[in-house]
Amino acid sequence: MDLNTMRQTGWWPTEHADRSPGGDPAGSHARVLDAMAQAAFTNVRTYSNCCRSTLMAVQQHLGLNDPAAVRASTTLAGGIGGTGETCGALLGALMAIGTALGPEEACADAQPSDRLARETATKMVHWFGQAFSGSRCYDVQRHMVGFACDDPSKADAWREANGSMGCALACAEAAREAGRLILTARDQEET
Image (cartoon, rainbow, N blue to C red; front, side, top):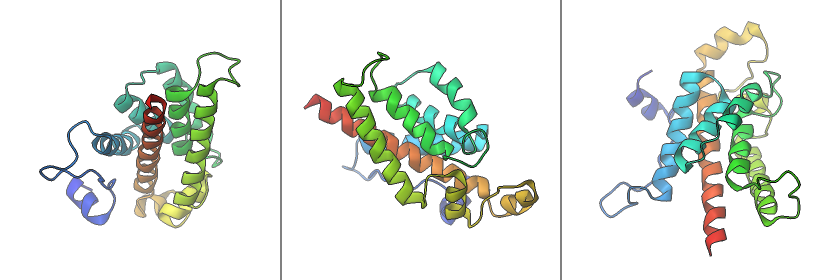
């Protein structure tokens, strides 16, 4: 499926930035969030790991270069090691929030950055559950495609239903929301 077909059929992340003359300027939050969503979508279509793809998109567009986090995300795809548990897109988003807002110290429970990271993560989990009718990988698949590809006998039907496109869109929207939450938290810290 080419880019124009994906946009026409809804299989591409929706752009929220106003690109008309006088609209959102280059580098604005809205444009960065659109780029983040598109990167997550493209990443998962290219590399096939929902957690890593979501995390990498947020890292790239917010300057959060953390190769160790990207490596750690490897085992969280497909609902934690392919088990269908918590969606990898959500886990990647949460890892990005922790990387951006969390404290560097191991014993940091009382620090403001720890509270901010946890509060932001809670918002992300609530948003994700509402947006995708749950936080489990198979729930998200059912929401996006109509059924879960939870055994090999469904692989052909999954491909025919563009299941991987549904997962890519979930990654795109998770990256966008994580980025929005991170930018909002950073803006609030500055004031």
